Length: 418
Ligand code: PMP
Image (cartoon, rainbow, N blue to C red; front, side, top):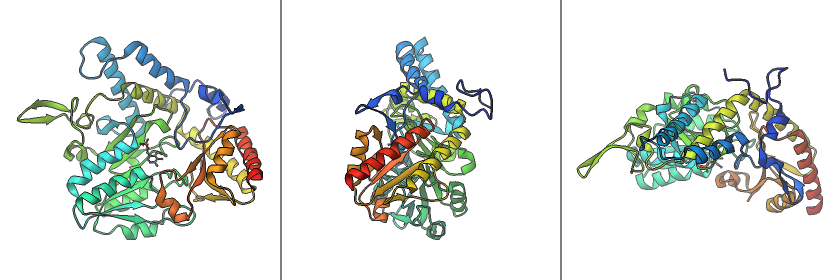
C-alpha cells in the first residue's frame, strides 16, 4: 500500500482532490492566444507535476555526477538515484529490476527487441505478426528486421469499431509466426487490447510477445507479470516523467541470450583487443552515459503516480471520457474513430466538411490543444480511408469544465468552417 497522497481527501474513498492535483501542474496555469489553456494532447506527451520538475532541478543543483564510474560522494548519490528510479519503475510495473533495461523511450525499447532479439533469430519463411492499430514505432523496426532476414510482416486486422479482430488474430498465429507485437492501448482509437489473453494464446503456440505499453502505463495499473508477455515497453514522458526516458522489460532468459545492440562504456566487465566481456543484464544494454537527471525525474513521477493511486487515475479518466463522449454525440456531423467497449480517454474525430488541420488550428486559437494528423499510424488511417483525424486525449488533471470549453470551441469552429 502506498502512503496517502498529499492531495488525498480525508473523507470518502481516499480519491485525490482533483482540483488540488491539477494545481500542482505549473504549465496548466498558462494562457494560449489570450485564453486559458485546455491541454488535450496527452497521448502525445503529458504535462509534469512540480514534484518532477523539482526533482530534476534538485539533481542538477545538488547531486549532478556520472553514474557507476565515480567513487566520490556525488557519483554515489547519482548512481543511487538512477538505480533507485529503476527499482521504483520495476515495482510500478510489477517486474524485477534486473529485468528492466532503462532507455530513451518506447521507440528505443522496441528497436532493442528488433535488433538484439529478432535480427539474430529470424530467417526467410518466418513471420512477425503486428496489428493494424500499431504506432509506427511498433511497425517500422519489424519491417527493417524483415528486410534483412527475409521474414515477412503479417497484419492482424481490426473490426470497424476499432477493436482487434480476435478471431482473425488467432487464425493468423500460424507456425511461421515467431513474434507478435501488439499495443496495449491504441494511441489513436483508445482501444484497450486484451493483452493477457492474447499473450496466453501466443505463448501456447510458442510465439514470443512484445507489448507496447506507451499508452497504457500512464492510465491504469500495469501488472506486467500478470500479462505474461516476453517484452513490455514504456515511455516516461507520457507518464508525468521527462522526455528521453523509458524502459524495456524482458524475461531474464531473453536478456541473457540477446547480444547487445549498442556497445561502449558501462555495458562491459572487461575490454581488451582480444575481446570484450559484457556486463550482466540489464547494464549490458545500457552503453554510454544515460539520461540520469531524466530518470531521477521519472523516479519522482512514479512516486507521484503511486501516491495518487492508478485505480483513482483510471476511474477519474473514465469519468472524464464518459462526459466527453456524451457531449460529442450531440455535435451534428461529428464522427468518432474508435468506439470499442474497453477504451482509454482518447477520442479521434472528424467533423463533416472540415479538414482536421483547420479544426485543430482554429481550436488552438481558442486555447485548446488537440493533435491533428496521422498520429504515427498511417496503416490505421488507411483502414478508415481518411488522411488525418483530430485527436483529443485526456489525463487525470483535466477537468469537466475544460471538456465544456472544448465542446463550446468545437461548436464555434464548426460554425466558422461550415
Ligand atoms: N507507441 C505508441 C502507442 C505511442 O503512442 C508512442 C508515442 N506517440 C510510441 C510508441 C513512441 O514513443 P516514444 O516516441 O516516446 O518512443
